[in-house]
Image (cartoon, rainbow, N blue to C red; front, top):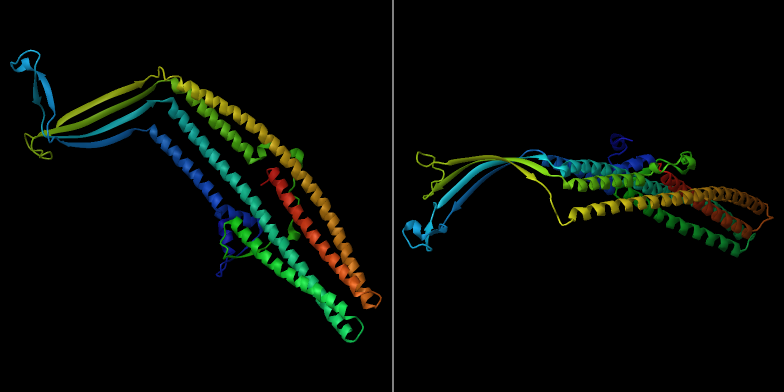
Length: 436
């Protein structure tokens, strides 16, 4: 869903209605971890610009002004001034004020580290993009689980409300019967205890609803003050997106792709270290003017106050000869780091295999458990119905109704727990399959 569509769902009271897919999309646009991952990708892009700039011409302008409060002294052989050989005469050369203004330019002609550094920066950018995807996967899983937790609690509240209505009706009828002497006071008390227990549990579930809704908003990066309405329901959930395990490939998992990117970066680093033995070549040039004055009239350009011009061009060739075997040690480190990646890849495959196996087992067990709990709930509902009819005809007891109601409530709770377990197992299975 587009950001524009999500905005349209909001009203003036700061309310928003979202399906689970829309909630995931909202989280991708607003959650802090996703936003930070996107910023990391932008930082990587700027890093490419930085490294690219190192290969472009470097131009620097400068201005230097010196005031020699005391001119430097030089020792000149004494015989230059008629003195004895072996003696020295102190003399001072120069002017008090010296100024130099110039511009210097350099251009990198060849450097193996530069070319590979640029390639590494692009690979790092790709790694940052993949990290965004990994963050989105984790966010999608967290939002999905939180979303369905809210729906389960809504269903739990609905079932409690239905149970309270049923017990409330039975309590009214029993009060009439007790008043007319058809049932004992203890039967009425049992129903009141049951009713009060349900009411108390309903309040607990309502508070739990608030907590689970706040958790969902947090996972989405949404303000807790926002009025959020969930448009999906438990009935709309299904497992049709589950793919056969035999179609799984390790490349479907973003973690595997991240490891491959790390391997590529290490290979580039190894090449860079190997090519560090090659020479580097830099061209440079300098153009400057210099002024020398005994009076502070540096910026007086009239006749007699000359600025003297200097210009040069040159080339610097750097040839590595011996570095104390530092590069060799660095190359060996890079090779060892690549071996670590091989080990990490093997461990990741084993971890994925275990995760997928556990997820499939949990999903299979959850499906069986849900079907079993559904049958138990349907059976408990039929027992309650029979007990009520027997009680209405005077052949059943109040205690029998209470026991059947207690069994029904437990069966409903077990069913919802099994449904929640199945939904969580399905989400974990999809994550293990790389479907998020």
